[in-house]
Length: 74
Image (cartoon, rainbow, N blue to C red):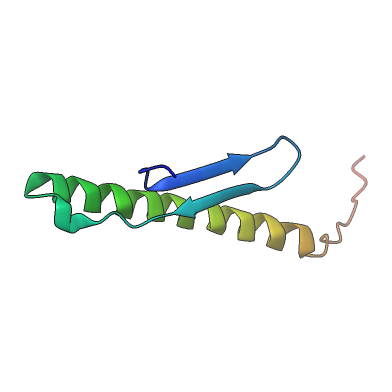
């Protein structure tokens, strides 16, 4: 078992599995806690961004194609 906050498993052509473990902040002091909390927030924001992008792509594929009118110019 790793002491890392994150565990990522990936096999090409398959899903990416990300496991987040909350660190025990009681064992750290001062500035270290602030850095850990900042890093945690940044990882969560990055995850939110990935999810937002996946949702946008899903919506784009689900939206019907717009009908276009071809105008002949002479």
